[in-house]
Image (cartoon, rainbow, N blue to C red):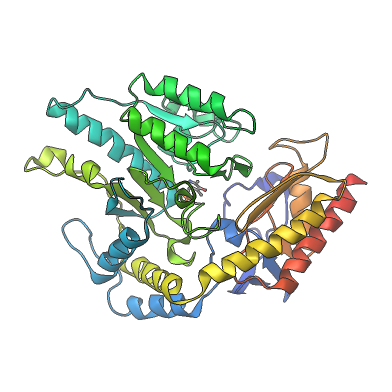
Length: 427
Ligand SMILES: *Cc1c(COP(=O)(O)O)cnc(C)c1O
């Protein structure tokens, strides 16, 4: 029987197998045919503590029977208030920096970034109305960036085959070169030059560019980027949608650079990965630029499910898990476990460029056939599937982003499959 389902980022013409998953627990997915898969990429970077964490599942069940959904324009509920307070408490903080003080809810990483961009332009628009600044609308972006798949977020992301069809709809941005090793100063100089043209904001994925190929840059560069923006009064937007919730070793990547962004987008792990929710955090000056007795200045953005109560209850449970369980200990142990195994794997001649930040590891498979459209990625996907492992390589880059509950035996299986892939694909 053919399915009417049209899957994302899936070429249905290739007839790749589409495994049917019936149950998940911890780091394991159970398939309809009775077999299991280790979820090596946290089901696309969302599952943090593990699938079906009992406290999150219970919070969702309880909330679903009490208050499911409420219009959020002009109404509020306890789960949203608790999440907002919790986010402000744990947001990146540094003495002398304006703290993140306001929380705007939405329902995906893309919408959280769209909201961030709209807040930045709204800020300058409203300041201009008061004659306090000139209107600014240009966005600076980092080369190889990824911020989502809506029109606005594609506009601020890397251009390529994955968005060529919509190029006519995308707005112009100014791209700052990626700070590759040895090219850090060129990046910072380009940012400084671009800031002189009075752009509205600079948006970055802090420390680690995910979809762009798991590319790392060091905390001092992030710190200097934020300092340059501050000197030129350019708003600094951190997209922590993927890096947030412990992935890079700290709760948020910005912490490692002592950076407090003006606007920060979070999503993915905010509910532990159980149910969609997102939030955009902003400093007081962004909020105050929209607060007025003039209705024309309110922040015109909403989606039907903004701050859905069930999703917020899941996020409340996630915040409690971070407070009460040894999540940081698990992350530290996983980071070490990956580091030793990755060092061994790096000795394999089939691999190059091993890199790791916290619980995220990546390595490139040496091939003449690199690049996003190389048929290596689907062949690797199928190979890992046969080895009981869910991985989704980016071109010739194989990366791991497991849930923090993965045990040493499972991690050994993952790396054994990577060695087997090295043997198989270099032969
Ligand atoms: C995944 C991701 C997004 C988009 O989030 P969605 O929830 O998929 O819309 C935005 N930014 C970054 C850095 C991401 O990794």
